[in-house]
Image 1 (cartoon, one colour):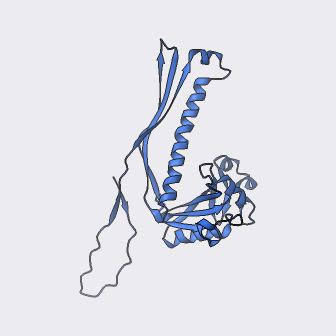
Image 2: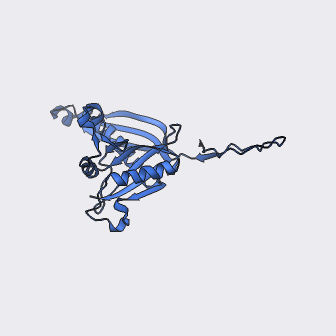
Length: 240
């Protein structure tokens, strides 16, 4: 159980010789329920001997990637479903999105405004690769590769628009030509808008079967994610 502080209310004027009223310290509570996630492989001795690369190392890396992909996919679905604000490209109805309704500067500014109105600070926008391609064509977009920041580019940072860092992810994928970007914010004190509760860090174990002559590799972790401040998020639906 995680207790979250809430925004304070406005102070009141005081009257001489009159006792001030006491305000209660208000908290909200979010309950995390961790679940195990894992990936398993088996490698026979014959496969290991005849492989042209380190098959055990390859499976270990793929297992770690599989866990990371699950976290990313879970987080994206969680944030889109729990976002307290929503924007549709060009202000049309979501069911009426057409090829002319790509994501643009105005849509991002509209989403930023919604989050700021709710007293949060927007920090990062996550879009599909197709959405990133649309943004790269905007004159307002500052690209990370133009700036020479190769490390940022490797981390998935495409660039900045309206002061917001923009990342692309294949987890954001179109469904019937409609994609949903997510703008992520935080509190004015830098508190995150969603959290992950880890019960167990990723752990890899191996077991060798002498009779079967194969090795089983398992990588398991345990966690849960929750939206803690819904209005610090905004979705942007667009056509691609």
